[in-house]
Length: 107
Image (cartoon, rainbow, N blue to C red):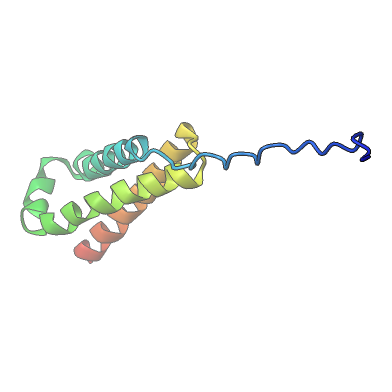
């Protein structure tokens, strides 16, 4: 007769962790808001004469909008959804991009 005292209790395999996808809406909104703020800086510095400069160069600055949105999404994902750090990093990056384009066009 068999010894039935050696029972093997198996546990179910642990379920895989859910996909950790970063939600991109806050990062995109932060990127768009930082683009708007960076767009307003030349108006603060140079006044209403900035409109004449933007009359011919607006495609360069408009092209920075999707870049700023993608930077906001990437920063939000890389900084692990820390909103304050995302705002600071995205704002600095957007202002830097605007400054580079603005200085290149003003050369």
